[in-house]
Image 1 (cartoon, rainbow, N blue to C red):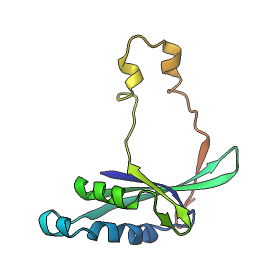
Image 2: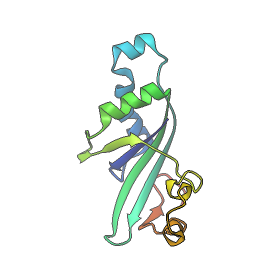
Image 3: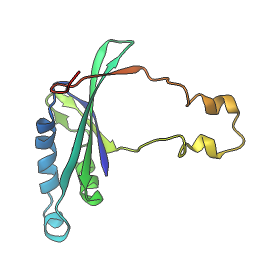
Length: 133
């Protein structure tokens, strides 16, 4: 399962995020005894520059297997304070044009459907620390 970490400090490294996640994976005795151990498969850090406010927002997308352990991590880490910032943790959903619910309905005008096609993002992706520019 992909887990989205929002509002992490911009100076966060992958190793810092691993140290935040590890205790949540190992915390519950029931999961340690009766289910597969949780593993962190992949971590992607995103630094987004808000064009309007000129503020750097950092987020992380972490792949955690199996899904029940990822759900446990979401429950335990959501709204926790990490390095002085309250983070939001939730499941990350990959969106595409094919699974957009507005495309499935026939009673929505085409101009509203086409709004999703354009690039309306307010952020610009900037390199993270340790990432090539």
